[in-house]
Image (cartoon, rainbow over the protein chains, first blue to last red):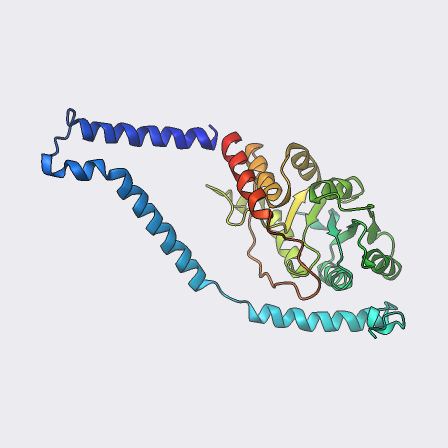
Length: 102
Length: 210
């Protein structure tokens, strides 16, 4: 089943459960004073989801690590590679007269 | 892939203005593949770079030989998907590695990709999905790559995501290898602002059709 249909099915089930709670007819009977909260269930759900996303993003940004060792290793290998290639006959732009930055 | 020694690995390098990075990445690929004794070729697909990338590639071809460095340039920028197809058509290996030419994908990880693919029994089949959908440092079996590129219609980052989605639809196994990603030292990124819009619309497309 495609993703869109999966989400529509999930949404449908959520709406059905919500409708049952609102109608007060099957299974659960909610006291009048609490009915406001039942109406607000979708808002609460979205709010919680939003907060969860925000927390995950902040956590990941905080823990994002640099790979200094890898960056250093790469710099050294760039030097090593250039030297080895020069020995094997490669001409880098810095060596040729055509590259005059005047 | 128990006997990796009889396999040949074709490494596709689509390039655009990578004249500083290209010699280094070729040197690194050659170093690591030779150290591990793997048979390989590097297919450089340059899309008419104005900075002289092709001349650099020609020097490398002289140094490493025509069987190791295969030049298949194109006249202008024609996109990554078609670059892969062009590369596969000239690849003599049975495995294909795609990667970025700007040194953010380090060739030292290629032997790890190869040995991970070697043990299919312990390969991890990912659910709900892979941890990095847009990364383009990958090892494919050649005929699988060809089939997947043919079944994808998106462009840019979404193309890489669609490849994974199609791979799972076809029931192929996918494994993951952790790598380090060092931001490029030389040259300029080709990533632009309108990529975000393409990404969002591409994501919706995948959501509604797969």
